[in-house]
Length: 273
Image (cartoon, rainbow, N blue to C red; front, side, top):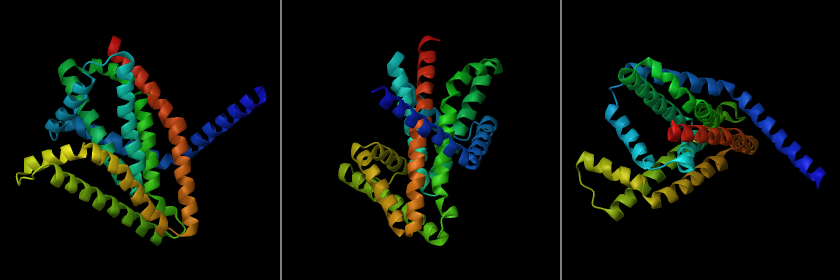
């Protein structure tokens, strides 16, 4: 029994170190994420008024959801919120890394906005209190988005680059088209669509949070991935599956533990400080 336990520990440690090795191999993509993130933070710091209402709506929504949460409930909420962002950053990266880049820019801008407003209200001296909140969360999210970019740029190092590029384009458009059809069908079956732009936008937001769409979306994603997978040549299929495997393992062994630590630290800081 002891030998089996030791073998398991050795196997887990090997997987862990291999995960870090994979993270190191995608350092250029992580560096791109860091640069975009830094740029968007500076942009949000210098021009906080561009999307102020949208950011206030996001902050208000998060505050309402976490209003009565304390202790482990708050830890769980923070963890799940960060996990959702990280998962989206990885899986959506398959489509040329477009969605991870959007996530980077949006999150960076929001942080820049928060820093700007915090300095105006409480002064720059209070910023050090924000550091513990991002010490594990930001690396986890940045690594996730770096993995997403790596997946999105698969065609660059595929053996049959043109075919791989075509496969990823078709996968991307199949995802967009199927998502649009699903949203439209939910709109048509649940409510009458008015021509007023604000009403249409409101209806779209409600449809995106509809349980049916949340269930359908992973299926659409799987179909889109299969579309591009079957177009790949045999050699590229093997490389693609290997990349997916390494990405998933790195996410489980590196990103999730970081997010758990982030949730614990932020949750308890927000509860007792």
